[in-house]
Amino acid sequence: MFYRLGLAGAVIVAVSLASLMAWPIGQPLAPITLEGDVDRGAYLARASGCIACHTDFAKGGAPLAGGMALETPFGTLYSPNLTTDPDHGIGGWSQAQFARAVREGVSPEGHAYYPAFPYPFYANFSDQEVADLWAAFQTVPPVAESSRASQMSFPFNQRWGLKLWRAAYLEPPRTEPVVGKDEIWNRGRELVEGASHCAACHTGRNFAGARKSDTEHFRGSDALPGDEKAPAIDHLTLAERGWDVASLTYALRTGIIPEGDVFGGSMGEVVLYGTSFLTEADRTAIATYLMDEHEGG
Image (cartoon, rainbow, N blue to C red):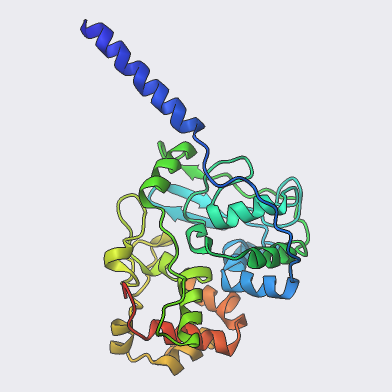
């Protein structure tokens, strides 16, 4: 009897595991018929950190050719090639596949991307924004070189397990406008909580690598890849450290902080390849939002 019960249990586990592995994720592919604007797309790519994360500048890598290592407690990830090469990059993708990857974190083959790719922050990108991004990426010269394969330890190298992670921890971005706040503040919210994905680095994470958004939003993190640390950027901490809207706006353009020093590490790259290319209005909006009290911060 116990043998039969054990066998039945094993069968149930096997069937459940097979069902999980076969369980599809993401929405059905839907075409975007809007015409994209290359300049707007390039701007959004800068705001979203694409160049900084997908270009190995230290090794003289070509723009967006990937290869940047991201060391995590679960293994090492390498940013993929986003050039137009059809074999090693995204040149063989359709625009609909690109849209699903950006907004849902699902590959053309239907596999889940690791959340090191900040797709949770891009989920509210409009069809027009995706079309603009797509148009911009079509201008990137192809690089016929594959990025390195991820080196994740077991069981984190089993991508089907990310389906459970998504079910438990995937959260929508907080980019919707807030009634009662002005246009500048809401533009800052759209950028900070969306494209610029500030919380990806400046929010603590739990044992599973998910952000502790309810309790530690913008409270900093001591566990960034490469043993880096991200300081708290909630409005109270920023004010205590001498920041205001003007100085933060200036720092996002130049990298120079109020003490006269400069941002280092990852934040230096954020400025160099990202926020320094934004308009002064958008940098001001980011600073305005961060320096004001808001939910979770």
